[in-house]
Image (cartoon, rainbow, N blue to C red; front, side, top):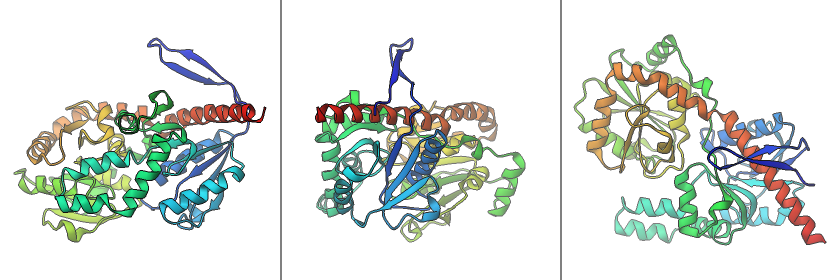
Length: 396
């Protein structure tokens, strides 16, 4: 079955695809694990719901770890392989019988029609992390079986080009895929993350209640760090900055999955994983994420949608859409504690935060999840058309 699209060019000469088909499409989505607070899982559920609302069929290929109640978009096919390689092996055996018009993976596997590199490039992450680790820890991680498995799968998708098409959520990731693995740039689409923007809006009263529930004083400057994988997201640098900055009444809230015992500090209030991040954004004045590597931080985009200035690093793909001094501050390296302190002082001025808040809300509206779903569905339709054409050629 061919799904026709027409192609037009905008004023910059860039291609834009207009959908010309209403055919029913069977889309297989792949995600091995599940975390209740995981950004990839939340994104995939939103994307699948959008696919279903557009009249197509969604099926999830996963393991027993994904709860039935957390997938309402269609059928679930469960694979028994829990490790990355075993899961990829089982999916590869199943592909020919998956009954999917197009297979989109959010997981590193051996092959797929569309691979969404939402987790970035593992090789790039290891290279960046090595700069902040001792020599013996660098050697230990190079030999770690999990990392070796990830690199083998990445080589298959990118180096061997067994991903027919790649969706990168930032230009940073798109560049890494081509620079490290030589993957053709004309087969990469950059589609930035999206979130349900309006769900993160809050009123002054909601903000007051959220702060009261957390026992925060009205005159406190509340800095929020939210995310899982605290080492990668630079929590130690955030704590060092809070401890060394001489800023009046400032409080750091830390939410997400991690071990507080590794980050002891009297300046931090650990909240654990949360099912309602909106309440935390409503309580916060500033969002801080001095990350070592983040393809495009969903939490940063959620904070922007809540109107909060974001302090993050150049190693966060989200920084590509930021305007310095308007949407937040961009730190060149995560360990630049002096620069983080400078940004915290700048954004501690409530008057400036309020003055620039409407500009942040306006920018966030351009990254609603509906826009992401629409663009991703275009790519899936194109991939389905290409797969159908290739199959016909092979069978003639």
